Amino acid sequence: MRDRFPLLLLGGVLLLAALGAFVLKGARRGAFADRLSSFRSEPDGARALFLLLAEHGLPVTRNQTSLTVIEPGRNLMMLGVSFEGEHGDDKAAFDGSDAGVPPDDVREDEDEKARGYQAFRSPPVSKEESEKLLEHVRNGATLVFAPASFRDNPLLDALDVYLVRADATLGVRTLVPALPSRFTAGVERVEAKVKAFLDLPPDAVPLLVDDTLEEVAVALLPWGQGQFIILGAPELATNAALARADNAQWWLTVGRALTDGGTLAFDEFHHGFTGDRSMGEFAARYGLHFAFAQLMLGVAFWALALRRFGRPRAPKEELRLGSTDALFATSRLYREGRHHGHAAASIARELAAEMATRAGVPGKSTPAEIGAALELRGRKDLARALLDVARAAAAAASEDDVRDVARLAALARQHLHRQPRGIPV
Image (tube, rainbow, N blue to C red; front, top):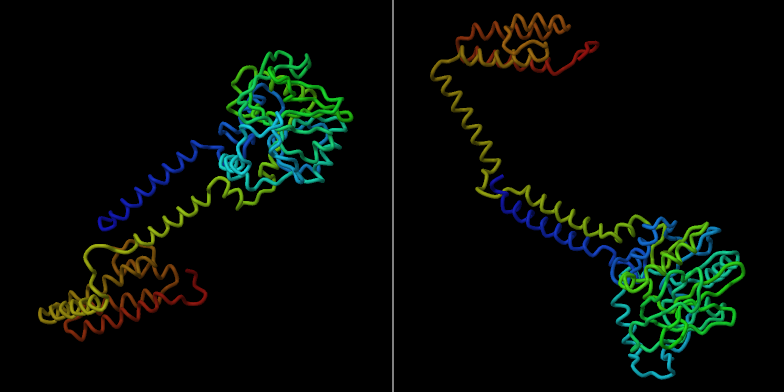
């Protein structure tokens, strides 16, 4: 144990380092998720919104399956998801100029750095899913939709809604209710950065407009028996913006309206969280592959710990020769000292101890007692062999007699380990 202390010390240091890394990683729980995901606890996530609605007793859940099949009566919240076939001029600013707007490649690089690695596993909404969404809303559902970018997508094209990119220098805007409605009850003003203002069809109803520019940032659009709520200010749903002005109150009002007689599901499938995740993907999501690597490292250190440190041990050949020399020296002492009777008695005593175990009696029993017990167990051959060895040991007076006792003991041991037929063990 003392020789392995350096390895144990090194293993303890590595264990403390691993535990510290896990603690730091746990403190940043939720950073792996995509922006506006209800799993993300970073400032640009929507975890606080999900918890706010859940803590107020509203029936909210997460949808982690494809939207090709949607449960009837379920309203949806799609925040920051992208679509197949998005199009539009990214440089079309709100005021018709490019003043104050960073180049597209710079803004896109900054956006990608802010996203969790789960964003690279996020599939876009397919054309089939877009059609299913339109059909689902037409049948009476409500969809809250915050586009991932200021580009138009097939869903907005079908609704005849267009996004007009806001000037990047506008900063946080104050949005006020355009008119009294069930979606703005108790709300005086909200504050959020606007990514794009909305160009709406005639049947759309503005919900929130810019207090200064009087441009629509949030609107309600009837569609069949259902309706769309479109946000040109996705930041309104983020953790960082929820504490501003009446932002939380506005979401509670919207949440109560959308869960009246139904459930509200946050779409997480298009943030990379699928319900049919494999065990490998599940392990990778929570960093268990690092734990497995640490386990393998521990096994490697354990294997190294089996190697002995300290003084070198004597080779096996030297041990064998030393044991042989010791045996010859002991036998020489017995021969020169004429301890024939003691040597023979030692052989008989060791044999009796082995026989006592088979007979089920104490090891200090006499050969006669052991023999009687062996006979009761049906082993008269062993009893007879033990008594022969005992008599020969008692009469030993020379080296030849000791040799005869050893020969008889060897034969008795052979019978001891050979089970006769028909006799239970």
